[in-house]
Length: 276
Ligand SMILES: O=C(O)CCC(=O)C(=O)O
Ligand SMILES: [Fe+2]
Image (cartoon, rainbow, N blue to C red):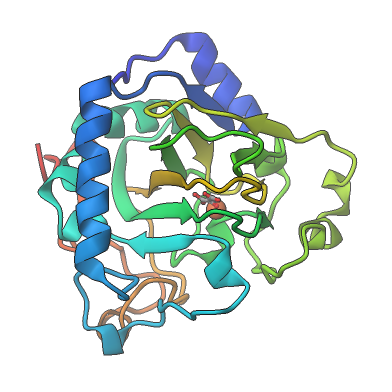
């Protein structure tokens, strides 16, 4: 895992809201992670969120719908795969993300594999942060390509600098690519940036950045392993997102999201990482 950063990468990330990390994983690491993701997906069957009672989650597959045809989505593989956990909770990765965001500690929000099947729908423009159960402008995601991510098969696209424009109120994510621009007309004139990636290379992007992906116009899969992180100290904002009914029942708006079994510390200046 290549996690050393140069000052100009940090500067660029803060300005644009995203950064490419070429050859983030070595060939061996990529093979190990891909195998673990494949095994985890097989083990989960039709469940979408690992490690919880399937009746206690609102995160479920809805076969045959538009959203189901955007990608195959399996969330929190770290709970069932020690290998996935080792990658998404690598303290050196956490430290790198803290450097990019200028924060003192970071926890996992959730991981997910996002796999566009052949001919999959596009991922319409959206920002992730407004959907999550905490509010922070310093949440950050890593998106690691397991297959080549190309313009034909649906690589990521970003609206540079949009993380400074978006707000926390939720806006509907619909089938319509231009929906986001109704909420943020000031972004409609910006040029978007495509990020094609070799397998093992990665994109890092801020939780408030507007991003999307094209349709998969090919007969092959476009698989990625991603993980979203929140700053240590983030508090519950009342939104369910991936939380179970049990968890919601215990939380009050303003409670710290510091349950080590749900949101473990990946790296911190002041606390020991959960999995070092
Ligand atoms: O992989 C995709 O198509 C979309 C990725 C995305 O929206 C995310 O990782 O937040
Ligand atoms: Fe997203």
